Image (cartoon, rainbow, N blue to C red; front, side):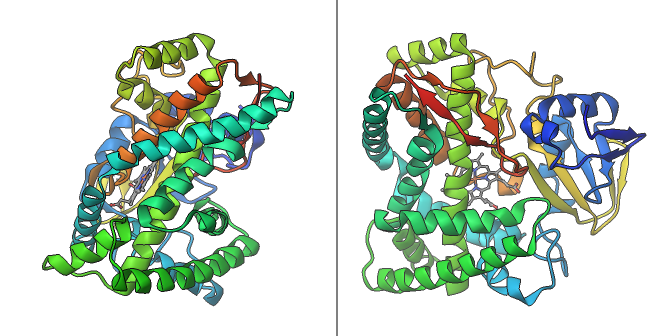
Amino acid sequence: MKGLQIDGQQVTLDVREEEFYRNPYPYYSELQRKCPAFYWKNYGVVTFTRHTDIDSILRSRKFGRRHEGCPLTYNASEDATLEPFFKADRYSLLNLEAPEHGRLRSLVQRAFINANIQQYEQYIVELGHELCDAMLVRLHKGEAVDLIRSFAEPIPVMVIAKMLGIGAEAKDSLLEWSHAMVRMYEPERTPQVEADAAAASTAFMDFLEVIIEDRRQHLADDLISHLIRASEDGEESISREEMISTIILLLNAGHEATVHSIANGAAALMQHPKQLSYWRDMCLQQADLTGATAELLRYDTPLHIFNRYVLSDTIVAGQELRQGQIVSLILGAGNRDEEVFNRPHELDLLRSATAHLSFGRGVHFCLGAPLARLEVRLALKILFQAIPGMRLSMPPVKANTYHFQGHQEVMVCI
Ligand code: HEM
């Protein structure tokens, strides 16, 4: 396997190795066979690939997203230019641990419940059909259309913006800021990536300051208003900085992974005609699509890797771990673990894949999972019903990113 060197329990592999990022799954199988837990020399982290180890680390209190004195994100730079990024990210739920995390998470959860995601179902359906109609006009002219830009990308950003009560006209700015910020989560980053993330964070925070101030004066039925109410009604309160970090997290987390889930799911279905016909049949029969949607999320995992700090010395899978050390958990590998999923490299919509790790586990389990499932299910249902003859016009090519697993483009025709 190109670029992969295994020396006992030490592994050398650059995530920019083309053969790897185009299709990391055969690499994962090889690692699971030979050294399921290993020291990844390129990144200086102990890494876990087995479902059972990832599951238990994510649930364990011996591991956390943060410990006293640690940098806010792994690989954090001391460079002052990054200050706006860290300010925007400071109170992201993903960076907090108990008790701060529990307090903020329950406020956000309460706001989510009050916002009632089911009421957005009709909006998603209408939006999905509108986007399909626009695609059909171009497809009927014989054009090949990129499914990501034309369909998978607009849905999640428009839905989360609507939930937050932010006008659709801000869509392009939100996408631009979010793309610039999430590039910080890739294992390696350049000074340009850092400068772009800092500039995007400043613009994003300035934009939200105005919105939050306005919303405090005019409470409505959106997520920001519910967040303000949740903090005013209960004993807990939410500071301005926490509010900004939370909204940025919801906007960024709320669409980046969902875009890839929709596009990866559509590509996988078109590459597996038998599974696509199951999907169509299930949609026609109004069958429950929960299991099939879980399988699509398992098969091509949209977020591949997450890190944790070791909070107290421990041993996992024979690896001695010291307090303060960073461990990496490859969710994409755990989702293809044959100990848990039979024939893991096959897409099988009829299997029960609900044990997948794509939304994480434990206290940081994805807060937006119900919304994400709803969006993926409805988007793929509408897409294949509205454009029945759609097929790939060329094989989709995976993007050169690691944390986010998606395609550069998914070109389709009829
Ligand atoms: C298919 C799409 C999605 C995937 C695959 C996904 C995946 C994840 C994962 C793996 C985590 C846990 C990270 C960790 O443990 O370190 C997470 C956390 C989170 N996600 Fe999602 N997510 C998706 C969509 C969404 C949506 C639509 C929203 C909100 C609108 C959202 C909001 C969040 C939040 C707020 C957290 C942090 C929870 C916490 O730290 O307590 N996600 N997501």
